[in-house]
Length: 423
Image (cartoon, rainbow, N blue to C red):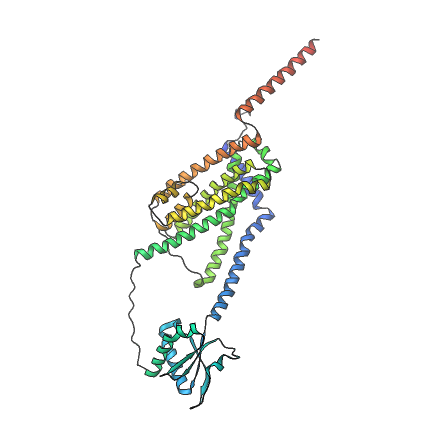
C-alpha cells in the first residue's frame, strides 16, 4: 500500500492493457513482422502473374481460325458475310482466314492446309458458299456446322440492307437471381473469414509456448492476474492481425482496381458493402478471440512445440467442421440448423456474416456480438484457471497450505531465535 492508501496492484483491465501494449509493440517493431506481412503477398503476386500469363495463353489458344480455300469471289463473299454477322453476334463466330484463293477450275486438297501450318487453323472451309465443305477434327466440324451454314447463307443472300435496331428494355432482377447472387457473396465472405482466422489465430499459441519456455509467462503471472495476461495477449495478437489484414487489404484493393473487369464482381450484399466490411472486421475479431482463447488453453497444457501440434490438430479439425456447419446453414436461412449455427459460439461469426450478406436486418448482429463476447470472457477465465492449475501449480487450496506452512516456519524460526537469545 502506498502513501495515498491505494494498493500498487493493477486492476485486471489495466494489467491486460500493459501486457497487450508490451506484446503489440514488441511484435510490430520486430524484424520478423516484416516477413510476416510479406509472406502471404508472395503467393498472391505469383498467383496474379500466373493468372495473367495463363489468361494470355488461353486467349491466344482460344482463338481458333477457319482457313478458307475457295475462289477469290467466293472467299471474299464468305469473309464479308462473316464480318457482318460477327458485328451482331460478337464472340460466337470463329475467325476466318483466307489460306488460298483458287483459280477457276483449280483443284486443292483441304488436308494439305494442316501440314506445316503455323497459323492457328482448326478447320478448313472449301467448296462454294452454296455447297460448303468443312474439313477438320470431328468435334470441331460438328460444333461449327450450324455457324458455317449461317455464314454461307449470308454470303449467298448478299447484302440484305440495313439491320433493324432492336430496342432493349431491362427488367429488375428476379428474387431468385438476387438470392443466388447474395449467396455467392455470403460464401466468399465466409471463406475469407475462415482463411484469415485459421492463418492468424496460431500466433497466440506460438507466442504463449515461447514465453513459457523462457519463463516470462511465470514472471508475468506472479506480478499480475492471469486473466489479465491472457486478455492482454489475445488483444495484442488481434491488433497485430488487424494491422496485417489492413496491409494485405490495401495491396488486394490495389490489385483489384488494377485488374478492372478481369476480376469477377460479386453481387452487392443485403446490408451493403460498407456495412458488410465493418461487420466482417467485427466478426473476424470475435472468431479470432474465440479460437485464440482455446489455443491459450491448449498452450497451458503443452510444454513443447510437438505437444502443441499434437493437441491443436483436433481443434483445427473441429474448426473445419464448424466452418462446414456454417456453410451448410447458410443455404437454409431460418431453419433449425441455421439457428443452431448462429447460437453455437464457434460457428456464430461465420453464420452471422453470411446472414449479413443475405438479410438486411441489423438487430440480430447486436445480440450475436454480445453473446460471442461473453463466450470469450468465459473461455479466457477457464483458460487462465487451467494455466494456474497445471503450470503455476497454485490452486486455492494449495496456496492456503503453502501460506500456512510458510507462516509456521517463520514462527518456528522466530521462536528458536528467542530461545537462543534467552540462553
